[in-house]
Image (cartoon, rainbow, N blue to C red; front, side, top):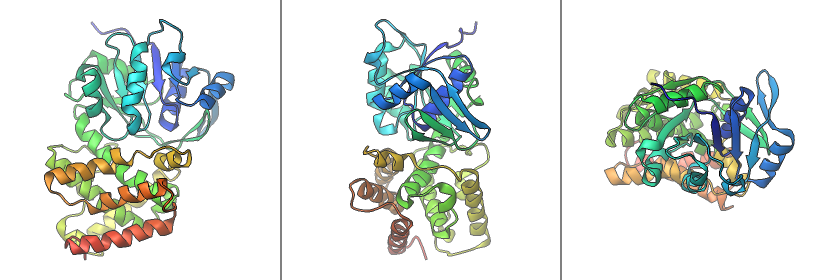
Length: 362
């Protein structure tokens, strides 16, 4: 017999993705409480609600919000927790939320990176559900978020099983956006990691929205090189990559040995055309890492590009582009460089030289 619906929901992290999710659920009658980690956000949401901008206008959602779990009433317990913090806050957010979760309550991870693999060491695999987000979202200010593109959620288990808990999570999330099950969470997660390693880092270094950046050919070439390195590492890890949103094939987009030695070809032209379309679809998307740096927070690059650098070293796979992007993001966070198109172009020129030295580029 199927389990009862998940009714009392905790959303941990109320930035772009967390805010859009919390608002969507609350607007459709779900009992939602948000932990924001920011007293200003909690205060604004409590006073006037959470504002959500969409392409059909602005809406307000009423929900309870607190800075941390210890601010909640004694004895309160939630049926499920949805985690939408940056990946470098996963452990802290999980440990903060656990005391207010019902025994065996599922924990759903929306973070970029490989959050499920880190979380299973804390709570065990049985409570973990992965949730991959395919829509764009941004935060404009405390309690004010925007859904910048259409899409929904892809939900699954690390072991690939479709059980009652996964079905409960899918049914819950469908009250906010479309949701579907995958039996290859790891493959879908690594495909999303490839996208984030490119888009988040390039957006941070270039300092602009995705649509503007993708108009530049050298940015698209950097994007292809990043995805190529991630794909090579994923294959070495035994991952069967999924198509992103059912259409974007990372293995096809990745450059083969001949293409890495070329400046142009019909196939390269086709791949650039696909990236132009991605840039157009997600043109309003702004890097959450850049927003974190602007708020004085540590960027999550070590859990994105850094993950590829570490695993590439383990497999003996050179990943000079991801290495350069990781360092450039840290330089910007430390104030040694500025987010600008010129900074991104300098990274491109440096990595082309490195790739040539490795005989991986013309």
